Image (cartoon, rainbow, N blue to C red; front, side, top):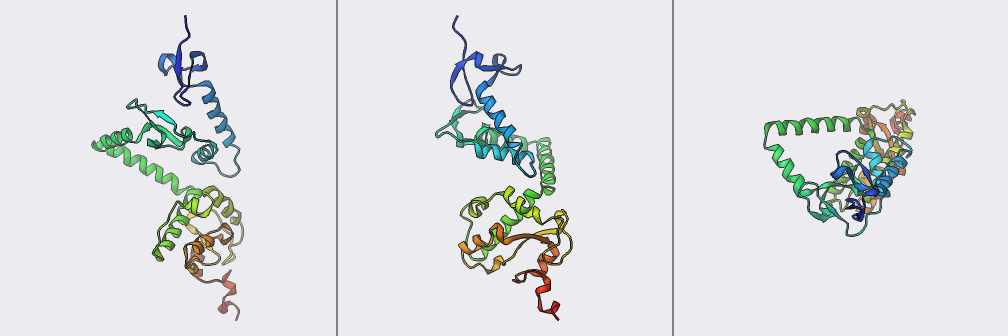
Amino acid sequence: MDPVIRTCKTCHIEKPIEDFSPHGGGVNGYRHECKQCRSDYTNARQKAKYVPGPQPSWARAKVIREKEIVPQGLIRRCNVCNLQKPLELFRGSRMQKYGRAYICKACDSNIVGALHKTPKGRADCNRRQRKFLAARRKDPIWQFRKRLSTRLRHSFNSLGLKKASTTDKLLGYNALALWQHLKVFLDKPCGWCGVILTLKLDELAIDHIVPISSGKTEQEIITLNALENLRLIHGVCNAQKHAKRAISKFDLAEWKL
């Protein structure tokens, strides 16, 4: 009798049933992805655990996504409508292979829309959103990335410009690189007042050593947001410094008398 042939939902290659791992919840008792694809995904996740610095789950998954090479014209089957569609038509997911979930955008929109039509669905969505935002408020990587992105957008708006791309692509570094640079200033004297800096997000701010307000063109603003021009100081100190070019308050005239 000929062996049973299955198509892997990850690599979309027909393989014998022996190339699939047993799984009680899968079709015919086997996983939907072959052993090789499963092994590649697991190995990538294990390697991501050794990235230096803080590693929340979304940060580890992002490292995995950046290492993956997405094949051109990749087709994936939606688990809801069971239709094969291009990878770009699937909802983004940092935890799934190639950064895309196994549910297309159309099905995801229908499911979310149906949930919001019921009081229980709206309450569940609001609860998950509050839990998500509460976790993000305690995450220094996300907080400093958001603050820098907001400041960059305001600088462009003041010149009548709009961001042509994401903050990561414009500046050439991501949130993890920004945090790796800023955390060096912790447990050291503040560059403005001299008081030791501690990791209290409400009391810290990103300071541009050369004020970002001095930039008059798009390229100048991007240059002023380079890591070499950024440092961590107290929020109160950042408000006092404002657009001054002084490195510390002791460089001001009133402190030299």
